[in-house]
Image (cartoon, rainbow, N blue to C red; front, side, top):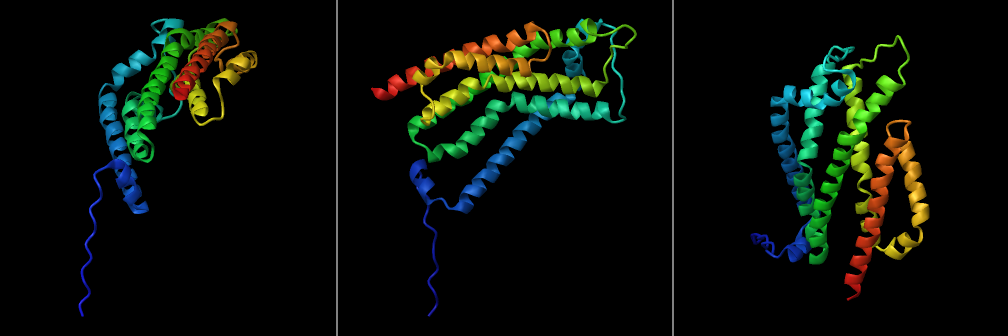
Length: 259
């Protein structure tokens, strides 16, 4: 007798029920599609940043020229350094600009596995995390990076030393310092997530605020770009504020959960 042909059952339209029916292969296929979408988003932004590469370069070296004067120049030590810098700058800026879209695409993969309330908070965390990251970048750009260059290229430079930098070293310093500040500003996100999973509480944070500020001061001294107190304070003050803001937000969330 001929074996009856099996027909696949259609997946339910409800996302929560559909999640239960999805196999490991289905999950991997969806993850692959979302990775492709993420690469396409970054690629679109990279086309724009590469097209305006010269204008972006002139904008990013403004702190350097503000310290050493409008006639300041760079040295090219490696043959392919300028070309690689264009690609690196384009990639990093494209990822930073498209960060909300990338996080939203990733969250779309995770959301079906969580309850509706967690899904709503997840979208808020994505927006909050992105704003904090860009705030850290803005703080470094407007207050810290130029001061860092001035300290090492002018204040601490001995006589008879050429202050001009290799182009690749400048961009390494630029991106490393800005990313340090952007990552440091994720402190509230980390604390709130630890609070949501029950590891920390607002009462614990408030009771240990002195130790927390001391730890933040040590971290700020290590991560601050220059040996001067100004650079340290530019990281210490906002991180301390974000710590207390995190404790307040955790308190509000705990009060809401208890109702």
